[in-house]
Length: 211
Image (tube, rainbow, N blue to C red; front, side, top):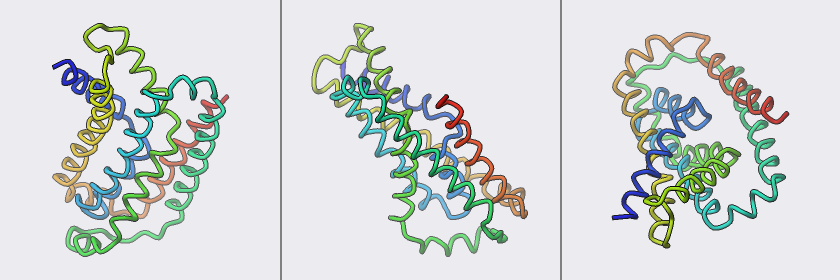
């Protein structure tokens, strides 16, 4: 029962922590609009794998990483560069009219490609490790959430990925439900430019936080 409570609370923390217009969420939305929900799911799956990885490292190696902040700095710099480049690519991407029928055909694109896109965007997110270390410290300060056993730690790590996946699934289902309306508003020459500016804005926001 104790491990179940930890799993639920960890999932909730992951869900709330993922409610932001981050690179993975933005790319999932874009993929759900331009492709379909099945392809977007692969992006989401790739995006939650780092949640498990960093939560695992936070539980078993958190003290080492917190004493070596250079690791986070390197990851932040890489993330800034990746986001900026993605933004530039979208800025200069050729616009085409999207419709539901043609997008069903485009599922031929590699699912593995989209999986790794989601994985890369999430893997170089420098906020994941500190976030899960902070949540772990908070859990350990509360008696009924303290990680006392390997089962508790496993539940904590499992919840980290489940909460993020739940949010991304809701996003995909919501976008899919209103896809026709979204395509109506997004079928203009400024769509890719706006998307590119969002990625560049996120990269600049990350750059500002470095100083």
